[in-house]
Length: 294
Image (cartoon, rainbow, N blue to C red; front, side, top):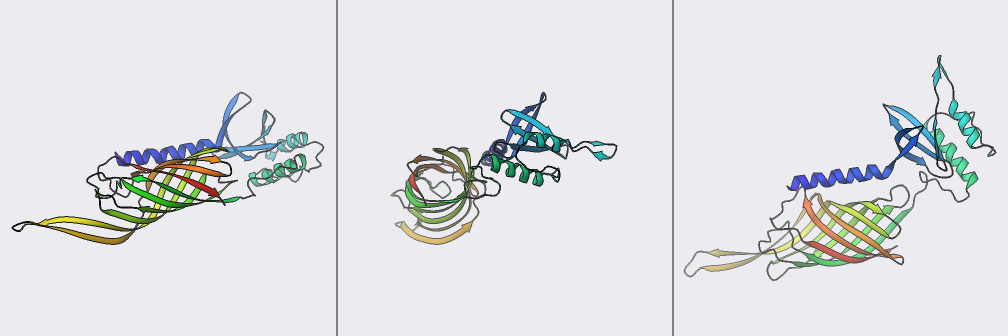
């Protein structure tokens, strides 16, 4: 069941990412799934079909295929005629334009920059963003020997890094999480982890994401109680501590809601794990927090 849930989440991640990067267009009565290379007054769309690159121009609501058919061994270069017509008056030369993604990309960017002074090429501009926040919550430490299913108070800090232009749906998060012992489970832990987040919902006010914990270093302390069969029996309480580094590959979900310039955060952590064993309890690991844009 655990493996099935993990595979389902991975499939969901890949599917959502693929859908977010492509869109369907109707061209001459035929529907094509196309990727956006340049978006602006003149938009460049493309994809590969049967191993061949095909390029499309979108202006307002009109979508036209750019062609370079071969007749009797000679390329007809129809794309140059179409682009010359669509960019008439811009002064941009089409004669030296090559029929490949890189050359077309540069042509579309040059035209859009002339038409719209506010146009920016998302393929060449980067915008690294940093966020720092704290959180608190409860956890039943489902990947430990918590036979009483006790709840532990937890607090911690998140440091998030992401690129706002080309990789705005992706983020790396360094997380420190402190788990405090409870009266029913004498276990505490300090954990530093590296996480990847995919934001399957991304708006100006709200993000929803899947979180994958890739690697973690944990220092834990736990109390073990056992009985020595004597007369009368002796109850021994022993405290053990130690550290562990592993790649748990655990998955959770979360959301950020923008308030002013900062964010209220909610996380449901460590729902399923690929490289760690669940103790049989239903996972409870909820945190809420506040995150600052740096």
